[in-house]
Amino acid sequence: MSKLSDKMNKRVAALTPAAILTFNQKISTIPDIVKLTLGEPDFNTPEHVKQAAIKAIDDNESHYTNSRGTEGLRQATAHFLNTKYGLNYDPDKQVIMTEGATGAIYSALTAMINPGDTVIVPTPIFPLYVPILMLAGAKPVFVDTSDNGFVLSPEKLSAAIDANQDTVKAVILNFPNNPTGVTYHRDDLQKLADVISKHDIICLSDEIYSELTYDGTHVSMGSILPEQTLVMNGVSKSHAMTGWRVGMICGPEEIINEIAKVSEFTITSLTANAQAAAEEAFKNGMDDALPMKQEYMKRRDLLVAGLEKAGFSCPNPNGAFYVFAKIPAGLNQNSEAFCYDLAKEAKVALIPGSYFLPGGEGYVRISYAASEENIQEAVSRIQTYVDKQSV
Ligand code: PLP
Image (cartoon, rainbow, N blue to C red):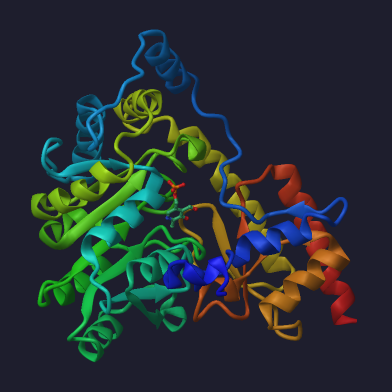
């Protein structure tokens, strides 16, 4: 008799546990370890946003809502994006609310992908796209950007499209980027748009860290190539609201209508009070993100200065709350081995760069969504570790 698990979906069976979470669990057993591992804001959700959710509960807003999201939330979302990023989305036709940015990625890819399609994924990148692509039956085409300051070049994009011209459906961009913290500037985006517009493909632009852009201002891909872009964003990172699970997709009406079918039969409706909270957040024009952004900037500067003193190099950490640091020459360049040793010997937990796919080996991702005190302690322990290794 075959095992019950043999009867399961082969695509699900092929998934493996997320390396980051497994690593994080393993090193969590080390006593007194300082963890700079997770991409989880360490602030509280702003008070007026929480109050909006409480009011929604008190007002008995406890019913199914429109599966695209409440009208108020879609209007607030479109108004925020349109005014801040020069976009032009119609809240009734071009906006759909999702279960966080994760839900946006899942719904968009499920609606778009046919088995056998390929999707271009510039790396290093947040690894979650890969299992979602696998579930949808698509194949990721990785394009290593580490030789171009972690920015996808138009030449590499063009070559990847040409090499997969019969199957390519989309390209994924994420900026500010997890894990590198690198942002794309208007020029970079325009050059990519020039390539994309020559082909019948969609750009999935994951801009979940848009409000955490430090040097310069965020430019949305939706303002450059609206007819071929799906902008994905949400309140998780900007408002310290990861657990509220509110994200969104904005884009061409034709595509949003297809994604809406997936939402209608899967999520049915986001939680009513979470939508009320997110509406309040967007209505405030994301001003809530500013004090957190100031704090992250201070921490970034502290971290980068300490890492550089210890011999790491940190290319362009302009956004999100990550530094992607090159392990100093002379130390173990196998990032996983390096991180396990650092955790054991120095009691500092960082994430191996190799977990973020091609181009990440030899680097570590360091999250500064952590207190200044912890960052200072980690930097001092790293310095002692490096000094010992260099003797
Ligand atoms: N996209 C990127 C690049 C991320 O780093 C994350 C979370 O870390 C997500 C999407 C998921 O965001 P959410 O919590 O809104 O689902």
